[in-house]
Length: 140
Image (tube, rainbow, N blue to C red):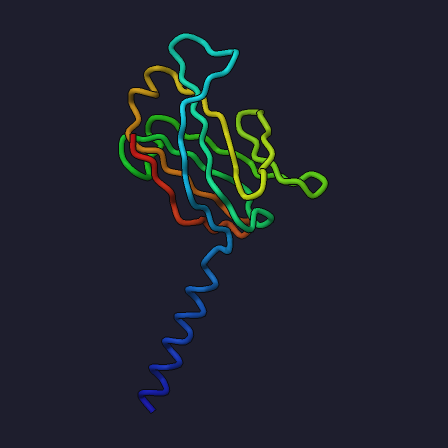
């Protein structure tokens, strides 16, 4: 009887854990310096890319520039993932970029002080149920 009760508890915990896991996955974070025609002195444009699956379930992308992992103490940027006529876009700071294949790309402008101040970039995505993906990290 105790074994049956233990099995039921383990099964319920497994179901609860699975129910709180998003089906959206992100991988392969890449951060590159960008060159744009409208560059201002003392600013840096970063091109941030990651791959995403199940983009149809995603709603927001979060970019935390911080002195440590998971902190946005230098700069926090939130992007919206939107769908228009079957095509998905990542919109950040009013700029909308198509998510091509599985790759989401964004340009983020940092001041000289922000660029010097961050050590880590933490990226994660929120799905339509409010659940978040695993976090990706870039260490400068």
